[in-house]
Structure formats: structure tokens, C-alpha cells
Length: 397
Image (cartoon, helix red, strand yellow):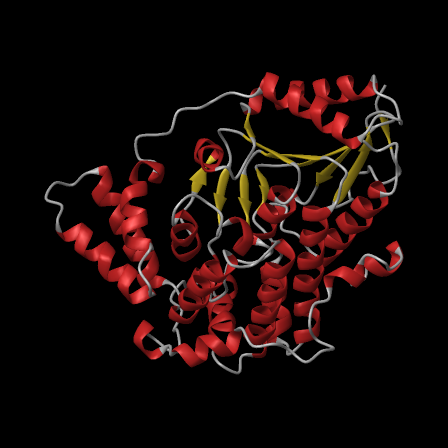
């Protein structure tokens, strides 16, 4: 019999439902904002996941969302307002909380199944992809579109983007291109695909199967049970005719170039060789347009970040590097593109940002290097020590 905790009421941004002794469902419940993750939501998720990690009776946490979106990411609009009001501390708090949560989700032992039934971007991708299992549907839309607002793919994405086949990670990170559920599955960004009409049945099956287990079963056994249930309900969808996955050879050829300038030139040369207006032509034109409209500084940061991510040992190292960049971007000492992007895309919504520097050639290697420089010791993100703190402190980071 399903029981509801005291957190499960209509006004909660995170609904908590205890399905049975062993399975808890967390639901993002901010549908009017497409479940954009606020500091309070990120902190609450952190508090709950940390609590479950030390509870032998919690064998599975299911993460899903109300409304038409899973989550487009962090509440960047509120961060933009903080920046314009000179409150850098409040803005950085969201990112520090998000980054620390992502690391915890990537390293915890309690199994997690996320249902990505809708828009899944930024931190929304982070709180799900870093978990154990991800279920995409035909309604899933994934992207990391940060370069369009003067930011960069973060919340641990430099780890998983850098580990995609070939140079697909560079393509996604630089262009902000969207993927559907079948493409996410093909690339390994999700573990399973289930039609949205059948996700409720899948959730019931997970709850039912684990209800028959006992507290003494190992986490290895729990993973095997969960994986078997997911495999039983999963499908293998066909890729659409216009899928970028059909152009992996071109992606590898163009996005393997050493610099953003060379990537753009390579794409333009490829486009110039086409005569007919085809799907291939449309895809190339879209990629080129995205690169030309994005912040030049963000593009160069992103390319170095993804390339560097391949050389780092784990998601923790990637997140530490991302946090350094975030702090430098927030202070605006090298470029104010993030503030300008927020103004144009989120506040004024004129969608005509004036990037400075205005073109790729003006963004020097030293400028990019400065974004990756270490912070003062007290500012550096220290992930390992964080999890020795009490839950009440963790939730306020």
C-alpha cells in the first residue's frame, strides 16, 4: 500500500512518496517553471539522498517530475537577477550546491532510477545522468545549451560529454544541439528507453519487485533486480531520419579539429561541398548557425573543458575544474558574456546579445587559461570533506 510522507503536499517543490519499505519516489514539483532547480530544491534533494544513503531500508530512489518537463536545469533567471543586483554570493551558492550534489549522486551507492519524460538540460541532466539508471521516453529532449547565454556545459557534464563516442561531446557542448530519447540511448546518455505511456507500469513493477526483498540483500543484488525489471520494460527505438547520429563521420571529422575556428571552418567546407538541400545540409547549417551565435569566449572555454575532461580521472576532478571556471565567469574580470547573455536571453528576452570579445580571433589562449586557474584555497571546491558534515549543514551549502 502506498503511503505518503509529510513532504507530500501540493505546494512542496520536492514531493516525497514512500511507496513501501524499500522504495521512495521523489518528484520535482515546480511545473510552472518547468521544474527549474532552485537552491532550495537542490539543497532538499541533497538532504534526502544523503539520508537515504545511510538507510539500509532504502533500496531504490525513483526521481521524476510533474508537468511537461523533467527539468531545464538550474534556476538561471534567479541567478541573473542576483548578478544584476550585485549579489554574487547568492548566485554562486546555487552552483556550489548543484556541483556538490552532482558529485554525491555520481558516487553514492543507493540505486537511483530517473524518468526523463520531457525537457532535460543542465542541472536537470546532472541530477539524473549522474545517477545509476536513466529512462528516456519519446518526449525526452536533452541539450546542454549554455554557450548561447555566455556560460559553459557544467554540473559534471565535462565528464560524461568527454566520454561520448568520438567527438560527439564537443558537438553537443559547443552547439547546444538537442537530442531525443532514442539518440540519448544510442549514445549511452541513458540506460533505457520506455514509452511514456508505460512509465507508470514500470514504476509499479520496480516497487513490487523490491517489496519482496529484505534489508539483508546486498546492493549488488538490488542493482541486479532493478536492472532486470528495467530491461524487461525497455524498448530499442529507431533513430529518426534527421538524427545527428547518422552524421558521426562528419562530426568526428569536423569537431576533432584543434580549435573552435578550425571546427567552424571545417563545417563550412563540408557545407560548401553539398549541392542538394538535404537533411545533411540542414544539420550542417544548424550547427554552423549555433556556433556563430554563441559567445566566442564560452565556445573556447567549452572546447578546452571537454578536451581536458578526457584526461581527468573522475567526475569529481571535472566538477572542481568547472567550479573554478564558474567563479571566474561570475566575477566577470575576463569577460562579462554571462551577464550579457542573461540580459539578452532571460531578462530582456531580445535574444540579441552583444558578446565581448565579439569574435573567436579576439579570445586569446591566455584568456582561456585564466578561466582554468586555481582559486584561493578558501574558495576552491572541496568535495571529499563535504560528506563528513551533518545533513543540516550539507543542505545549506
